[in-house]
Image (cartoon, rainbow, N blue to C red):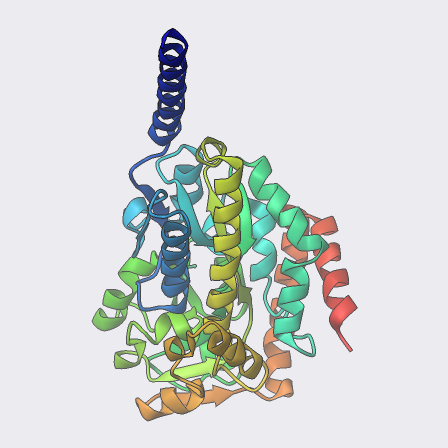
Length: 366
Ligand code: X2X
């Protein structure tokens, strides 16, 4: 009896110790983690971020609850402050464009070098070669060194040009056009070199500025500007693919360390799965280069219904836009005019990083 009683006591004590540990680890997790992103929920970027948070919630059995805050709510519209808020813990997670972090992490300007990837035989292969290559590793390290924790690259898309005034085929067509750009110096330099009149403005103010006519146009990927019905104000689109804009799934380092090793693995895998989905949404239907394999991938995860447009040019024409595809000679005029911009940014971005990216691209170019 004595013996039995002691066993019972020991067993009870063990149960208590285990549940205390449970409570301790549960207490270390927040009820809600905040995820920052700029666009709305209906964009490919937004859907990819939402999918990440859904996967984490499902796979953790509801233990890890990340909420996406769309439309730059967490940065109160000041999207180029986003990295500082991730670093100081105001923001836990983000799915952010490299453009918005580039004022604090200059290496990220690599992606915004004008016509850097689009001159390659297959611009998507070129972008993938960078993000999966030597340059991508350097970028991830730059984020971690500056106080973030990089998880993986997703995609906003190749950025195209829209405006309300006229068809743009050559730089001369841009003279004096008031174009909204993100508040990052490289964009101002590029659009000045092209002879336009760039205006730095948060994305959250852009639609009303287009509506009021204080600006004439903007540049963004189709799957970011179409869902917000830019065609109500901008009837002209030029597919010039002048830069590839990956997103980055990132997390505050202290938040990252608070997760168990198993949960870190779960979160990383969810980010990678969501990134593949986001990349597919950015590419399906854009043109003959990107889409077919991506649509197959979406089918394989039962998500092809999320990319219902299989020909964006036809869709943009259907809603009344004039769609302009450039000839190589026309593109060359833009490339030539912006070559000095690349030169003047080389040292700020890092000549080694640019070289690594060029080597990554060369390895996949045929
Ligand atoms: O502001 C933009 O243009 C957007 C939505 O693409 C980014 O956040 C970089």
